[in-house]
Length: 273
Length: 157
Image (tube, rainbow over all chains, first blue to last red; front, side, top):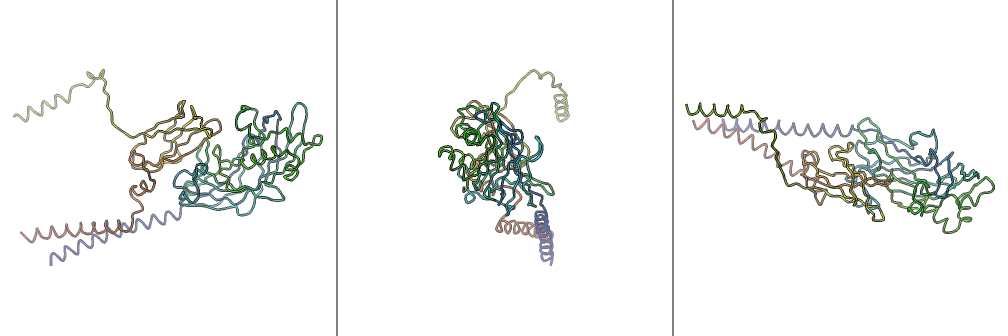
């Protein structure tokens, strides 16, 4: 009888032990499903767009409008750093979570706001908490353009008012933002930010960088475009650019436009173009 | 009496001022595992004197360590063995508008070849069903066995 009582007591204590473990796991599961915040995507043309710059061939360029047509954004929580330029793909690197948004094309103006304005908010969505360290996004054609540039270029007293339309649809796959701060961290009821960075010095070069630097060697510059101006006006679209630029210059322009997308200082892989 | 002398001696030694030994020096050492990185530009040139920022797994938002690469783009650090920091250590290197981030899996202060191995050794989460059954059975037998033991000893008397 005493043995039966002892066994019964042991089983009762065991039941209490197991039930407490089960309740703990359930409460953790409930807490996890309630943890969400906001994930925001911003686009940044950096000081090149906001303040202007001097091209590799000496043209002082200032932008009034820099239009981008952005769509199909997906943010991923990768188990480790995602380096698509080092061979990482969405197939060989596991992700624990992904959030897709902006399934319709949105046009943004990187030059909007004052000189020191913040990067432009593209879209934001509710997202599970966590660290989003990879992003895919597209530049999509609307009205024959993926990118539109409007502004003024000046050199040695000559002024050219330019209105350029490029049509280079591109899909980018990028790792983590590389900059002063770490981005992409979503905490409960907080907003985490992802950034796409457009490096327009890749198109026109930069007088602040050495002439033999790869940036300037690969950039088109502005002079080949200035040579196509009619008086003080330059208005060209993709079709006219392909017809009027030399094949070498058109290829340089194409390569530079495709390579615009970055994540801060981090490079992106071009999935399709 | 001998015990009394013994404890008095201990008390006397403990009361000795430590300042009499302050001018000495000592070196302690231990063997540990360090992580050495080398950062290069795409053209193969080293990222010399580049900014290095290291993030530990337990706090991916706050830099754990900051430093600078040497002339060869090299930087070395020793990850701590805190159980909270088992997992991927993220290394960010930046210079002149160029930068990269890479992850290095570490467990117990040592590099592991496989991240999945690191994840399976982490404490307190994601037990498999088999592990839970074994844990439960062990717990049950512990209680039952203890109850039987005390019951047996009482009946033996």
